[in-house]
Image (tube, rainbow, N blue to C red):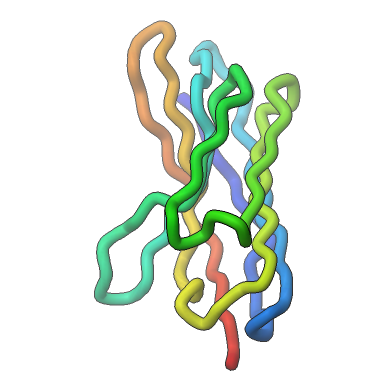
Length: 118
């Protein structure tokens, strides 16, 4: 099974920057996508950004132009650079990975808290 470990969460002022990192453990699964979701208290978990192994990148409209996702296939890592953060970005951020080989499987990290102060 794949284990995902996030790091980089913390407290940041609005307008500032924060970088989140996620590392996937090596396994027999072949990961096709790695990315990030977030969930604020009392709200549904929502998609933030992801990166496909082939390099395709997708962003939620709410973060497009402010956040940048990057990854290293060889190291099984994905980073999220959060620029110009807003108070509404406050949430627990979860690393996510999807494997399609040997069969489709989704993996989730434990989450890292990001708090943006006004």
